[in-house]
Length: 355
Image (tube, rainbow, N blue to C red):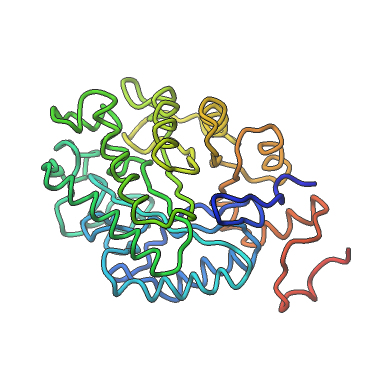
């Protein structure tokens, strides 16, 4: 049987297959509210058969948004729009998760449509572990006080509670791509001299405390993912060895899956981008710690995805651009692998190939 279409149980939740829709910012929200675009964008991937679908990075506070157009979950008024999406996605046989995020020093910029260039500011001062701007054109952030750190932890915990009210059964904490929790992890962005800076143990403290806070607010039977950047791709920064060590701590804290991405902390680094270029991180963390891992990064072919699972390099395949190009990739993949049991919507049955 195809590994890509072998169901997976994590805690009390079953996933029909191993294909995961990666969180992808849509920059299409007003005041953090989910609207028809988000329903159609995420709902169409459920119609397409993905086993698990993640929302975009969803801000736990207004100041934690990358841009003014980010999705949010910092107030109760945002719950109903998300609940509508959860209900539809689950009606199609898929599971849906929410990625909780805080952008830190990369917050308060415009939606990056114009070739990735920053056109305007979001209008608020970003925060970070240290007062170091991400790059030219970015504002210098304010260094978080200890009270501010405690507030961030509470914001993640409150967001998890709202996610539960919206009907989500999977949460992912975003600790990758140069956003706030990643900024605390890396010595390139964290120059603090208190209990949240300096040593490895201090730099990982905020993430582990966020995990523990979310886990107390999250039902014991529901999975908890953490997305990390396995390396900064920069000298003196966070490295794969650090990620292996961190993954062991996360497992002890109740994390079920480490979603293995990379980069994003500092600009102008050379990343050896190519097919499956981050899969080795997933394999190494999985092998060293025994925790479930998700592989992501230029996984675009059915045979490629199947081989990653068969070879034990990951437990889940996370896809982004390929599922933008083809929302029905899972249905097509099932055909290619000869798997006939995937759910096709009744409305689309006439287009299904004969068995």
